Image (cartoon, rainbow, N blue to C red; front, side, top):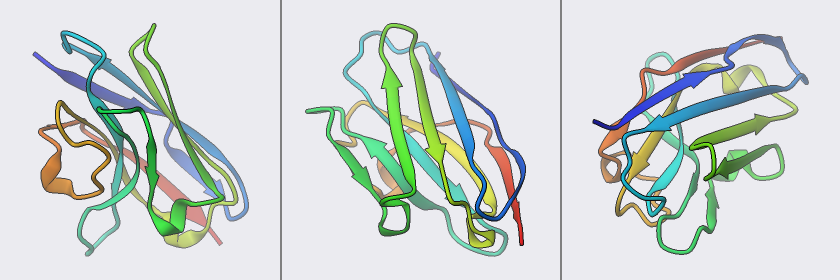
Length: 124
């Protein structure tokens, strides 16, 4: 059974940084896409940043470019999202996602595995 467990969320002031972690288990090989989505109150889930299953390339949402950095450690089955220069509009629940076939997609429907989410609150 695949499981994704996020950690690292919290309350931070605008301009601050947070590092989210995702512990993945249950995948039978390293050939899976992994990434991050978020959902703000009253809004749809949106892709933040993902690492493709096919070539390991990174696909960032426009708002993430230059501020957020995704990484993965295949040896420990961990993924991370370093978030810098956080803004109040980054306030959301952040979800770790996984897929055998997403290939860098930022569409929520492309991911069959979702964690429970971790709350990030950015105060102004």
